[in-house]
Image (spheres, one colour):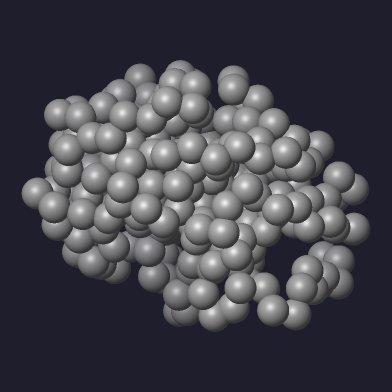
Length: 238
């Protein structure tokens, strides 16, 4: 591990994404993620430059969508911003409710957020807001897509209830409540070509569809907040 790098004294990092040559870290003013900036590195995180993201709205999550050649970030009041290089950003509307998580399948980008709502797009420009998948219940704050079982999106409520919703398309009417048994979940991330991995407070829970083949791996007795994928090494790092 290299020595840590402080991007800015008054900024907090909230999310990160990479396209293989450009690494972006989404930041905002501490203690709240207002006045977002993307810190950009093209030398594996050694040097960084800040980039204005065409909005002063809060942004919570960022993802690289390879088939669109775009970084896409989402945030407060449905704000969506996109960039092909992390330098030039364009703002769009993804609805009227806060977006907390963004991910992409092989043909659709999906964002989830307040009141169980989702939005989707096939080009990153035009977004369609969907009806609530949980009856305007708790916010959906974690989202993943996995190619397992033919490809599925997976969303998790923020309430710690363990409620998981899955969808093959990410469109309205396609989301199904899969499980209420995995209480305390804090994150969801597709980390391999075969499984969606759900990150719990002190264990990793793996499942292909949110209802079957559930396996648990206890890692340590402290909360685990995030995970990332390595396409070379598949060992767990915390």
